[in-house]
Image (cartoon, rainbow, N blue to C red; front, side):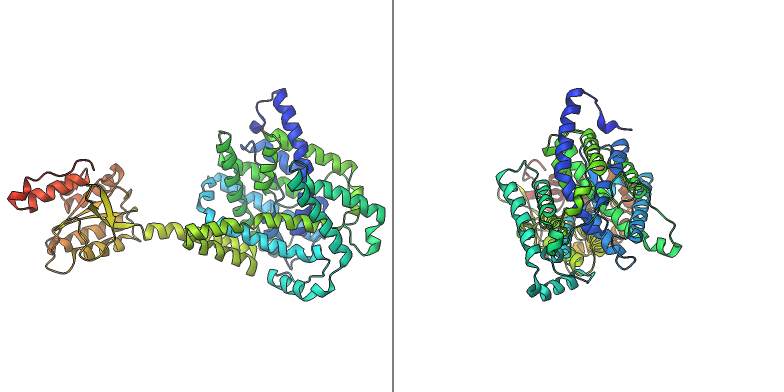
Amino acid sequence: MFESLQPLRRKDTLRDARAGIALAAMNIPQVLGYTRIAGMPVVTGLYTLLAPVAAFAAFGSSRYLVVAADSATAAILASGLAGMAPMATPAWVTLAGYVALLTGAFLLLGRLLRLGFIADFLSQTVLLGFLTGVGFQVGIAVLGETLGLPVQSRRTMGQFVEIVRELPALHLPVLLVSGAVLGLVLALRFLSPKVPGPLVAVVSVTGASALWRFSARGIPTIGAVAGGLPHPSLHLLPWRQFLALVPVAGSCAIMIVTQSAATARVYALRHEQKLDENRDLVGLAAANVAAALTGTFMVNGSPTQTAMVETAGGGSQKAQLATAAVVACVLLFFTRPLQYLPQCVLGVLVLLVAIHLIDIRGMLAMRRESPGEFVVALITAISVVAVSVEAGILLAMALSLVRIVRHSYRPHTGVIQLDNGNAWKAAPVAPGVVTEPGLVLYRFGASLFYANANRFAEELLRLAGPRPSAVRWIIVDAEAITQIDYSASRVIAQLNEELRKDGVALGFARMPPDTLADFHRHHLADHIPPSRIFTRLHDALSAFRKIEAPPAQAKSTTPSGG
């Protein structure tokens, strides 16, 4: 426990304490904004920076990862609980607590099953599309509050339609306050990036609201905020309602595993830190259980907040504990002024987070480099906006797995030929394409298994052509074939028999040791003799020329290498 705090040197502790104070200054306004996404009481945002932070510091391995409220999981929560209770009520808080508790249980189960590797199955492609979709979904959700327009719909597209319809009824005082906050934050970000613009905006507008009584001028404020440290608030739920929370918690757990692992991995590599992703699952589980027991909603490893603590100079979880200490002081002594904070200010802060999530530049770069992957990312983003966040994360997982299967099912193949400089090149597979008359060197770019074995056989039969075949040998370049399963071995045996009837000999070259072990284990050596298993492609080429070429040509030399 608490290994992420080591070593306890005075110099490092003071540096981390300063970084933690800076993180609190930047992060407090942000987590207050996340409560608007999650539909939770404002004070619960501060709670996410207390017990959950300490729990992850105790059990996690990452020295940099900041675990607190996050926009993606907050959006999943709000979408999943929609219609089950009114937002920001005790009933809603209880439901959110149980979702956090279930999420912690899923994460702990993931640790017991050593599922830290699951993060690798969500590609950057679909994560980019998912987070871009969440950015649009969250931005539209708070746009009405930012502009002072009433919005009743719970669906993103319905909210957008309502906002457009109500634009003539814009509330000018709210619009002026929102514009001033937005301008101040952006100006400070441009002129003095190290100054915590959101905190300056919150303090300034809260003071102005108290002085000029914004609430009396038709500008809604968040109202009284409960002071003091959090306390447990879970109550028994009906069994049917509890079961309805399971898919919401499952979606949150998937998002937490993938986002936290990806973020922690980036900073571990950057700072040459040893990372235990399975132990981080224990830390994330403990953090979410702590959130449930202290009256707040689920927490996640946040990329933006982790970047904040690194920028501020933090080097261990001591910085995050310092942030928790600052937040505890705010809860004990400074919650009273928060009642004057205009609601539209939190809307602006969330809108800025949403804009940060929308990565149009990344999407356009992907479109230029890989149009197919761009389509996958776009479909994911559209599903988040048009359907729901849960649908988006489930579709993201499905599309990631489909891409993995597709790459194995339709790998790169080709006929290997020698160019004028005696270097190997690959030509597309087509009838009549050969390495040299009578010989085909065929490359298959994936393991051979039940799903792609028939494609492998079809391409080789196509290369052999109709009877009588002009091809005498087909040698498979097996360098990329790292495995042959039982089904594929039966296909190879049958293929060898069909080619033999056509007068075509089938062989392999550059077979990795593990693949060669599969070859013998499945008794393929009974069908394909050792004389047609070659160490190098040039060995296969030389053997073919000696056997098939006329005696006058058999003495010709072949290029070396291979």
